[in-house]
Image (cartoon, rainbow, N blue to C red; front, side, top):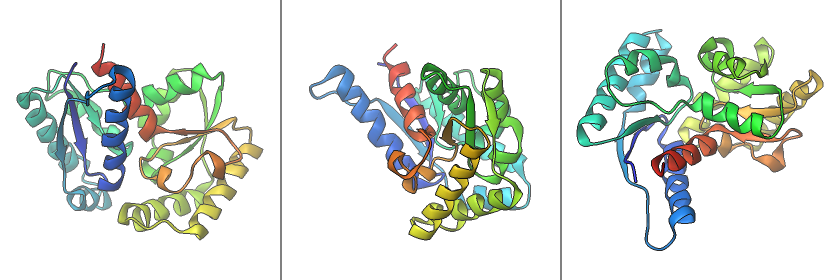
Amino acid sequence: MKTIGLIGGMSWESTITYYEVLNKEIVRALGGFHSAKILMYSVDFAELEANMSKGDWDGNAMILADAAKRLERAGADFIVIATNTMHKLVPQIEREIHIPILHIAEAAAESVKRDGFSKVGLLGTKFTMTQDFIKDHLKSAGLEVIVPDASDIEIVNNVIFNELCLGKVLDASRAEYQRIIAHMKQRGAECVILGCTEIGMLISEKDSVLPVYDTTIIHAKEAARKSLE
């Protein structure tokens, strides 16, 4: 079994899901007393959020590259970054290490394509929804990407940072997300990608008029599979 180098803490709530899914998948595959081999570096999310707020992405790249290098030195065989937004920094992090990074968008795209969908709605932080670091990977896989309109992007983003990252799960926010998903369906989306690792705290399959692809679950399952290659 390969050793997974997990960079977590962005936020710590979603990192719990990664740890649980990784171990459950290994038990499902191997049975008995097996569990996943994981090295985890959990960052202080306040530092990264402060850098995001002032546009200091280079500062965040330094923090995450340092974490990745520490995991590599400790014996990790590949890196899993337990957040969508920080995949914006994958090129900078890759330059600092000699082991691969398992990309969250590539895992999500493969899962969607296996089920025969070609037009996806994408929810996430405003960085994920408005910039190309996730969307380009989805488009490269042959998927058409639909994002909410500008005002709804702000709603989705505010719920993530002001509620979900602080452990708050509110029914009113769930209703807003449901409205936004329904609007993306009207625009042609065949499914919705939860492109932020916290959104699964708020939206599940039963809450959505579209099939749901939770990148947290997909990414963790793919990491477990890769560890058994």
